Length: 317
Image (cartoon, rainbow, N blue to C red; front, side, top):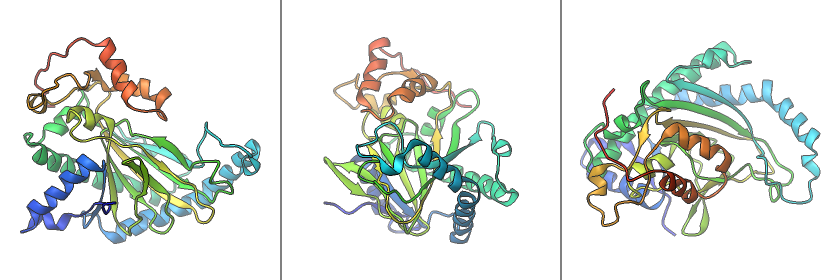
């Protein structure tokens, strides 16, 4: 099988730019995932994010997780668990309005660091969207505009820890799913693995690499690119040893953004009606109940209720 795509972003600034853009293009078309190195976020800062995240888990979340496991009898299950995940999480919203001051139990330094990390990831996400525009032949800024609702995009972070699991064959760290949103940037543990994606019918490990950012395509980019780029199923396998850290940041459309295939990409295709037109918030409502199922019925549900879209220009914010 082909090697998991790793993109050295420093090479975008020199003679190897075209070759690097080709690797990004192939990753988006054939993997739905790729890994970034030399992405502009300093290793020292990432070490601080990791240290504070692991300290926070130990201090405020580990005991709660153990109590939850005990209360549900999960350590002694005999058959596969299909309605929960072996993970301990909290969520932050950065855009359109941050809620970081409202998250309980965060020490001041950790709150400040998460805010700064979010700001750096937001810039990286927008830079990546423009690289995708370049590869797709879309005007610069098109994807960012496509994500804009009345208040701009939605951007949030899920901070997760996956503790050691006594029955990894019966309980997934995170059940298989595609991501509903736009583009996802993940800072994952470089010592404890577990993330896998489905490629050509086989589960493939996403290699843990120190100071890298893993990127994956969400359902909304699949729709906007008219299927040229595809979101792919992925999951987290729980491990018997070690706690795996995962900080996933989701750069998504605004709740009222209207999502549909880019007309410039539809014109090039023989089949014009592959994907529906919908409001992002409506998609998320449907996704909430169907997250761990195939994405295709979600798309078909909107095609069934919508008429032929009247494609118009995307308004700039």
